[in-house]
Image (tube, rainbow over all chains, first blue to last red):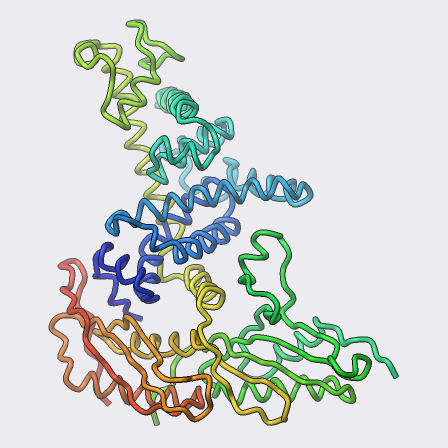
Length: 187
Length: 114
Length: 201
């Protein structure tokens, strides 16, 4: 099925979407949905959780379109919502400990180096990075994913994680140093 | 005289098996304005796909059934909607019921005109 | 090893370099330009950044496309929850029953019909008139984005015919008119081959 709105630039789609044009909004969702999903999955640990997050994020985005000041910046805005929704999702899980154990197990499985997906690309540098990322402390990993996958500023990451910008700066640096060292050892 | 209210999950199966029904979505009670998904996202509670309420005037012998459905475009949506109401009524006989069915989505390959 | 744990031998911290990577700001740019320790560590962090981008690319590819089923399911739920619109009544067989369709279901139907015609994408879609009253005249307004080079003449009639058929089949609306308006002409991207023409019925 052709989706002709694929050709329309972000700023025009965002402007039309905030006028209530649902097709324009859906075209944006299709355009950035895969990156939103990838980002949410790296934070939550599973595609099932990621899909919930993407849906909530898009719902929030649709309701708050009028708060988007720069229509051309819609990609970063969607990823920012996705990042903070992913973190919210993890927090909600903490409220339901019985669900938590189950999810953590699933998330660990997804992060584990012996899952079939990473086995397929085993031996590649990306696979090594993925494994090194999985070994990082939780907070460092979140900072790294929000930065590199979500392209967020320190302030944006700070507000999603409810920590200070300085903490983000420190954790991100520690994450990068650990990852860079591991990648050098791998080579 | 007083019958227990029919089970919602049984009705779900009845509605789901009507020709042309592709999905049964959480019914939205009149008092509830918050979107179903948003609510379940906050509370972790899933709304039941079929809502069965005791009838207002005679709670023991009447009931109200509410649901929202998705329909395949291979079937005429209004006909499917009426078929669902009829199937619910048939299933709950001899209980006196009023049925509220809303088509919330029409999906699938679109028939060419003529 | 070009990356120590915290501080480089020159006394600068890796945190400064990490921040420099993101913001381009560093307290002592002259030192950075000349210090081999700093340059080596920075190169290592940049390699990681490049690898991270490659990783992200793989992850996005693994997450699927915007036209996949998972995305469609999400969009279907959004349509359902966020914008059901007005309630359009259907004639009940049994008095007392309340049967209806949501406006959102009908505008989604209109969009699906429009999108099935090559070279056309449906933009805004509105049902004008009181759709909540059975038999009230309703005008369907549809804005279209048309791919450059696709002749609109004939396409409009074809679309109008398809829409009328779909609305007659799936609704009990009294459709007085279907107004089509072209709001955009889209230039195809060089990389994207033009949508192939389909044989006319």
